[in-house]
Amino acid sequence: MDLIPSFSVDHTKIVPGIFTSRVDTLAEQTVTTYDVRVTRPNAEPAVDVAAMHSLEHIIATYLRNEPEWKDQIIYWGPMGCLTGFYLILKGNRAPKEIYALILNAFRSVEEYEEVPGASPVNCGNYLMHNLGMAKWHARKFADYLAANADNPEIFEYPRSERLVTEDGRSFFDS
Image 1 (spheres, rainbow, N blue to C red):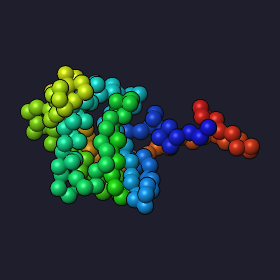
Image 2 (image 1 turned 180 degrees about the horizontal axis):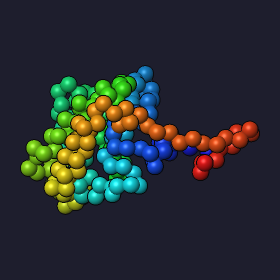
Image 3 (image 1 turned 120 degrees about the vertical axis):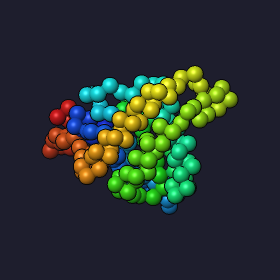
């Protein structure tokens, strides 16, 4: 069984940042999945569930209303490990090309007084939100992005090296 590409990223070395996770062509349309990593996996605490849920609502709202980008947005949602988000866009841009979009999206969280769509009609778990912690995580990540804008580590995945035997077997713990 093949190892999926996101599992080939060395999670002991990845830092918060914006990375290209995968590029696909679907029905003659190129789409790119970006890994927007908010915390350092296995080294920092993950974002708590309620704050992650609030960030999902707020940033999805921002992205789908951003005039220059709204028609390019396919998906924004949290990673299962709660260390970041996946953003799927039409086209294929380098992570640096979406840097300003991501920075502005996280900066925008500060402006919200309530979480959009946090009602029983609009949300499947409307009571599970934490705007205060969402603002804290968003501010921390935006400040980090701003301070590291010229650091190539925030745009390039560290890859795991996998030992492959002569007969093609891979060792995933190498």
